Image (cartoon, rainbow, N blue to C red; front, side, top):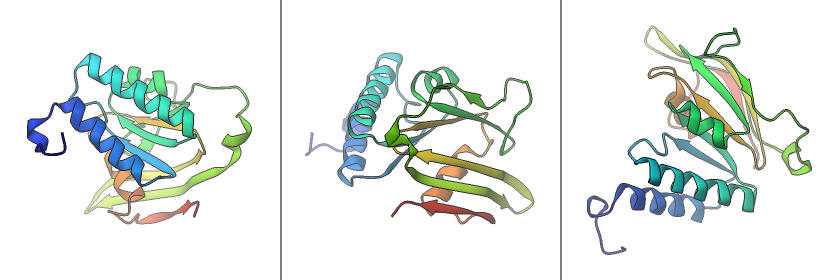
Length: 173
């Protein structure tokens, strides 16, 4: 495998290798932007079970971005659904869903990442609007929504590729 080019490997193998390379850095937060988009159903389930197992074993905090609400519902502790860059709270299909209503485990009280009132625009288009959330150690937050909803922009802000126009990000050191 080490002597192969990425194009010579299957999509699933590329995903597993990228996951391994990411985990070698011992991250506090693993950001997955459409982690299964190019995979068939079997590989999608295999990869997500692998990630879920690792997350639980080492109490990894995960931010999962996806269009696939069913996939996110299976693995996320909490889900935010975005529409037009904003978490919507109306009683429509785009609502904030609290999947786990029980008390958080003690290790989850440790806040790893906190975002407060994030906003990002490109020219005249507002892409992320007043987004706030907290990620706790060992928690998986899923963010779903339609294309152009702001999901990948959130990832790029958190990775430092974009600066928010407004808001604050606090990361555990």
